[in-house]
Image (cartoon, rainbow, N blue to C red; front, side, top):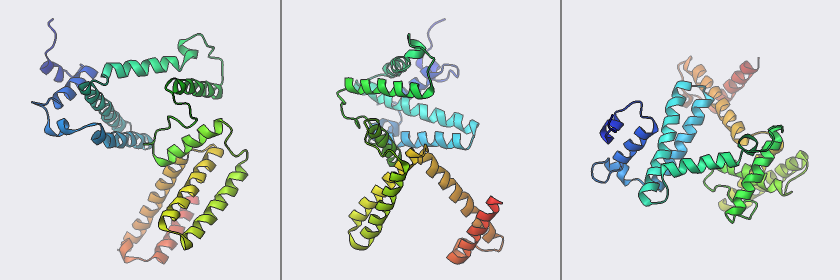
Length: 274
């Protein structure tokens, strides 16, 4: 059977990743592609990549497996998009990206693909993983303890990663009580800055407080991002119930006032706890 033409490939529902790669090539074709897709570059696509990753996480949090399937496809498209642009510029190809991550996973799991024993705890495996990553950074001339922590990460997640890196070389409070003391200190400095200093300094002190709060989560064995996401969900749920109670009386939040909504908030919170 002769090889499929590129047009056949695009309409072959069973062609897998090759079909998607060819679709992207067509979209980016300077003469026959989509004008919007042709105009895009790494910088313009990067925000969509981040957005799609968050939508994957959102579908998982809601346990919406049908939507997750679609969101994973959207996220895969982002990888295909970036590799298409990388190929056009001569930086890399989709196959070289696949080869790179495959080599990395094999190298980072010597207890699965090599001679090392699998008889070790998850904690020891994590330590070994970090040791391998540190060696990789050293090979890239990234000698600093904080090198390689991506600047583009969400600030709360980056704070946690920076703190973990610093802790590995001994720069950490040994006791959680010391972190709590630091929170009290930073909160007092923020109050003082609010009354006496510039808005820029207030922002700096507020950032310091958030940074220490992330550190507290780490000391408690909690993921600050997950904890804040949970708090966001709780606030959304409770406020929607306030709106529902107001609506039952023909009112909206705009028709209400803080005292009434605060009282309803307490009712909703008490109902959740009962």
